[in-house]
View 1 (cartoon, rainbow, N blue to C red):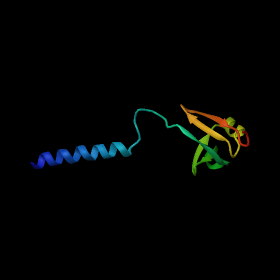
View 2: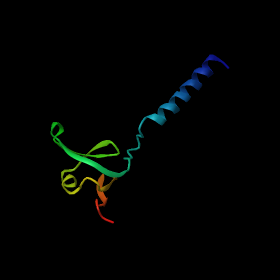
View 3: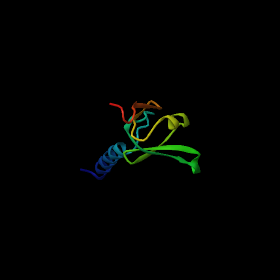
View 4: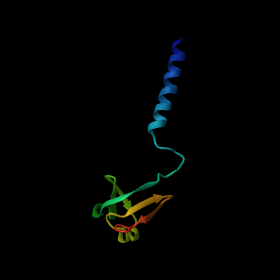
Length: 89
């Protein structure tokens, strides 16, 4: 195999690996579903946060006021919703 062929192959393999690591450019937002572990204001950003699966997410003020620790929530297409309230069967 020639040096140029090897270089081309390395570029293709590297591009494929990078495509797996880098987020999609298609504008798709991920869907998040999980139980709220905690909620707290974040004054430095003038924002409200909730924690799901040890990851912190910024949420709108009205959702923050409605959601409680223990609620099952979902984020899809830019909208936060409560799927199941804490303590309900």
